[in-house]
Image (cartoon, rainbow, N blue to C red; front, top):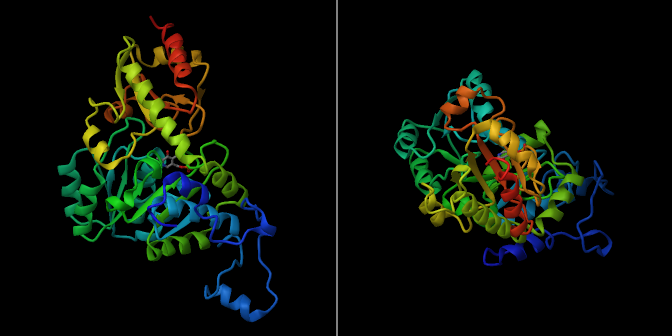
Length: 394
Ligand SMILES: *Cc1c(COP(=O)(O)O)cnc(C)c1O
């Protein structure tokens, strides 16, 4: 499907036209079969060698899973995509494919909590060096890249302080030293940001968030050129972090409304950010759509919409948010994000649960911070809900 086709059309038809569906069904069937049978050895052999299309064994490929991968591939404007059992599997398998002892990774301190654990705990014992830089300190990041690295790993906007990083600028620095640029696009989604057009070599997602959008299936996916994606696919097919067909189906179904949902979430997050910014119980609001946000200009240049994620700090710290959050009627207090319902939580129980209060302070995360994932509810109701819940603080 061409890149000129609109994102809603892509999210509905992408990946669904290339393959013959079961018995003229209009929806991608859930193929639970572990293996695929052949009537003659020669055809079986050709499919096994990849010389003819088809499936052999569902740890490697599966028709439902393939349709999901193809849909994301179309949305990201990529040549190829492969999927995983979770977002963390996508991240760990990608890093494991491209890094070997003696290599060096450059990234930012604000990447997703699980990704940070890989950088701080799992890679150093393998003799892989990791340089984690201040997000937004371009001089430092570029200096670390120039020392030489195998992978530049970025995430923008970040969690939970919603910082923005200029992908184009850093990708070009990384390519000068021959590094591979990997971007976690979970927060932005392909509706708001297309990292491959900004110089990324691999774009990856936790599909458990916005792509699925209904918080009912875990999954991960990466996109890039055929050669790079095949390398990661090969690692995953052997190591086995395969996406299950039923989850692929749930994600596929959720993705049909991706653009509708994300555009609504962009609007709701902007309105909530504007409302909170003028509220006397709120100290600061982090949302790239606000002109006061330090990354606003870069976000405007590299994103189509500013996303559904924001964070804000409440006067009175953790005690105040313990009082205020349970009063919300239309928000789950939960660790996920990117679904149709509004979801709220403090970093203490979500992104930075493993850290001490001192470590959170060092990372610039106030104890009174709230991460807010705007859902697709009516905006009047979300604002009225915040109004009544915040009134308990004054
Ligand atoms: C949730 C998340 C992940 C991890 O994905 P899982 O599907 O939970 O394994 C990675 N990156 C970001 C930005 C996330 O929000």
